Amino acid sequence: MEKRLSQKTIFLTGAARGIGATCARIFVSQGAKVFLVDRDQVALEALAAELNQAGEVAIPRVLDITNRADVEQAVHSMHEVWGRVDVLINNAGITRDSLTAKMTEEAWDQVIAVNLKGPMICTQAVFPIMKEQQSGVILSASSVSALGNIGQANYAASKSGLIGLTKTWALEFARFGIRVNAVAPGFTATEMVTTIPEEIQAKLVAQIPLRRFATPEEIAKAYTFLASDDASYITGQVLYVDGGLTAGF
Ligand SMILES: NC(=O)c1ccc[n+]([C@@H]2O[C@H](COP(=O)([O-])OP(=O)(O)OC[C@H]3O[C@@H](n4cnc5c(N)ncnc54)[C@H](O)[C@@H]3O)[C@@H](O)[C@H]2O)c1
Image 1 (cartoon, rainbow, N blue to C red):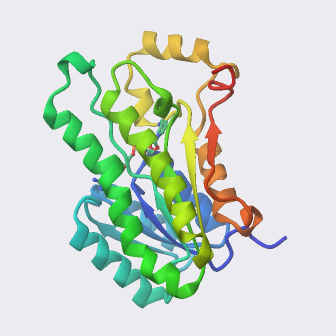
Image 2: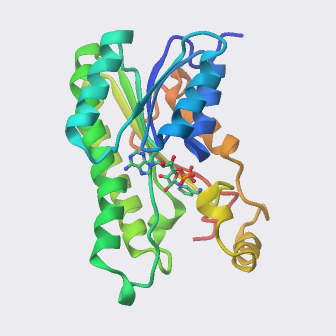
């Protein structure tokens, strides 16, 4: 059977660990080449070295996605080397949780900058190339928290903002053959969740109909499907991958 992402070139943010690193491994196993972007140089270069053992399939680039000049330069390099930018995955994201009454302006600004402005910058950087190609896929990491979550006003605003961006980009870019969707993971077993105190983790699991957190692989497979030509008629959608958490909402 042909691999799902054969010949695709993918610009992947937040690639160094968690869902991003798992996406990188699965994308490569499905025939893609990955341009790996993250702020964490050590983890990023280790991942690229691991992936490149079986052939030159990964290029690491250390940058902060809120830096427009660095993002534009990275997209330009990827295009120069591989000649195409088929897929953008806006995966990088952060949390700075606290109740609204106590939330600092700094915590607000940081989360909005990384989770909302960063994807806007990356999308603006790849768009002219995808328009020229008359094809492309843009996927972004939303979250079940987009629907509201105590202690996450900044994060929830950023993740529901991404849904607004996704739908707007889907409408604006469809005529150029570019599909745009979001993946909204539920609680997923990465550092973002495993660092939550254990008693709170147990309470969270009890609310999930499937009674467990997602694995990063389960989220990466949703990205793989939406990035592939199997999803060729899907645009402007949010795919909740949440073990049933939002089914009763
Ligand atoms: N883990 C979950 O339960 C969960 C649930 C819903 C949504 N999400 C979303 O999925 C995405 C990935 O989550 P994760 O759990 O793998 O997170 P993670 O914290 O394990 O990894 C995030 C990666 O993004 C990188 N990063 C952060 N800010 C960056 C920046 N400004 N520039 C470049 N890289 C940056 C980090 O260095 C890290 O490698 C995030 O957008 C997150 O909000 C996660």
